[in-house]
Amino acid sequence: MVLIALEFLGLVAFAASGALAAVRARLDVFGVIVLGLTTALGGGIIRDVLLGIHPPTSLRNWPYLAVCAATALIVFAFHPQVARLRRAVLLADALGLGVFATAGTTVALSAGATVYAACLIGMTSGIGGGAVRDLLLREIPLVLRKEIYAVAALTGAVCVGVGHVLRLPSGPVTVVAAAMVVAIRVVSLWRQWNAPVARPPAEGPS
Image (tube, rainbow, N blue to C red; front, side, top):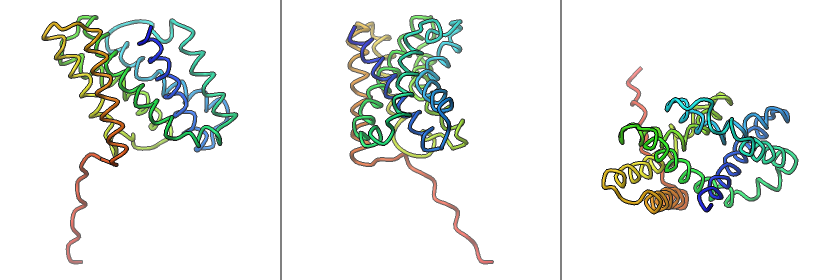
């Protein structure tokens, strides 16, 4: 029950971030809902497609769609107030990233994927929705240009994979791995860490 509650909290956070991005891009209410749904459910849908789970889990369970759509509508109606809760949204987003990345890895392992594939699928489950959101807004995905985001998700996924190899209890391992993702994400935001970026080439004499 705790993991389910955390999963829905992550869905709300991801849907809110997608809806806020849509509001900033001046999309209409339908566009806000679509972007909220895409951000919240995109990673899980990609995971299920890669694992051959058809139809994807989020499309078979209406509460997923209902919670994300309701969140997007609330953001559309009260976006100035939601925007002021930036720290709370970022914290919930970090929690959602941890839950989705580790749960995605666990689902992939349960479906028979190798540890290597499961870790990559878990990372994709955590970051996929945000990447699709940015592409729909015609932006370079945030995970490819700044912030410690994909690295945090991959760390949690690898932790689950190592626990699987060592035959440790999956429940405690998943919780510890999710907490690790949240810690890395929160500390990186607090310290303003970013992944290294290549220096632009020096301009030669004209």
